[in-house]
Each structure stands twice: as C-alpha cells, then as structure tokens.
Length: 62
Image (cartoon, rainbow, N blue to C red):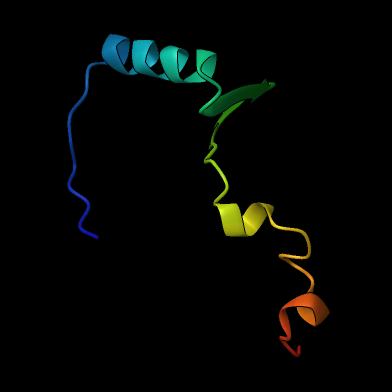
C-alpha cells in the first residue's frame, strides 16, 4: 500500500473527524495536553465466531 503526503486544512480535518466520531468509526480522547485518535473497524464474520482467538479451537499450536 502506498502512502502519499496530503495537505488538508485543519477545519476540514476537524469536521471529518467529528463526523467519523459521531458514526462511531473513530474515538477521540484527550489526556492533559495529549490527544489521541483511535480508528475503529468492523470485525469480520470470522473474528466474531466463537473461539476465534482460541488456539485449541483453531488447531493452532503456540
């Protein structure tokens, strides 16, 4: 995947992040002078299946 630098006006970025936060797609938190943006994604059907992370259920040996 190729990433390119893009210049975005602060007011446009702020508006976009607020819209995404309202939709539950990002989480914006602040602690003191630190601000953090966490992206959320929907889990796939496989990830929601019972035992997805259980190595015994999946037959994966650690």
